[in-house]
Amino acid sequence: MKIAIFAAVTEEISKISHMAHFTGIGRENATRAILEFVDSHKGENFTILNVGTVGAHSLPVGSIVRIGRIESGGAAFNDKPMLTDKFDIDDGVREAVLFSSDCFVSPHVYSAEFLGKLAEKADCFDMESSAVYSVAKHFGIPFVSYKIVSDNLDVGIDEWKRRVDGLQGTLCDFATDLIERLRKTSAVELI
Image (cartoon, rainbow, N blue to C red):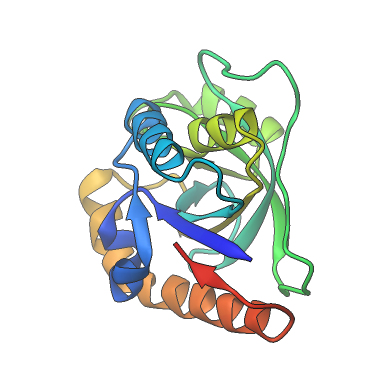
C-alpha cells in the first residue's frame, strides 16, 4: 500500500515533515498542490492521508478525530456527498463531520449566529480538506483524514500558530503509530 501524507503547513507536523507533502493554506493552494502531486504520480495506486489541525465548537482541544464526511463552505466542488475512506484498522478515535471553507472559522471572522448554524452542520472546521478530497476523488484516489483540534473557535490566527506548535507532537505521534499499525497488516510505502 502506498500512502502520501499531506498537511497544510509544516508547522502542523514538523516532527514528520520529511515524510509528508504540503498544500499551503486555503483551497486554491490545496487544489494546485494536489493536482501537481497527482500529475507527477500518474499510474500509481496510492491513498492520500490528510492530517492537520481543525477548530471545533465543542470537541476538546488536543483530541484527534477521523473525518467521515466533509461539507464544503462557499462554492462546492462536488455535487455528491463527500464521504471519506478509512483504513481497515481500529484507529480508536471519534468520527467527525468537517466543514471546509476558505476562511479561518472564528468569532473574529463570523458572527455568533453564523457560527451557531455551522455547529448544526459540522463538528470541526478547516480550510483545505474539501479541495484535497475533491481532487482525490476525481482521480479515484482514496482519501483518509485525521485532524487534531487546535481551538474551540476562540482564537485568532496568531494564537492558532502558538497552539499548533504545542499540538504537532501529538498529531505526529498519532500518524507515526497509525503507519506502524498499518505496516503490521500490509507493506506500506510512503511516497
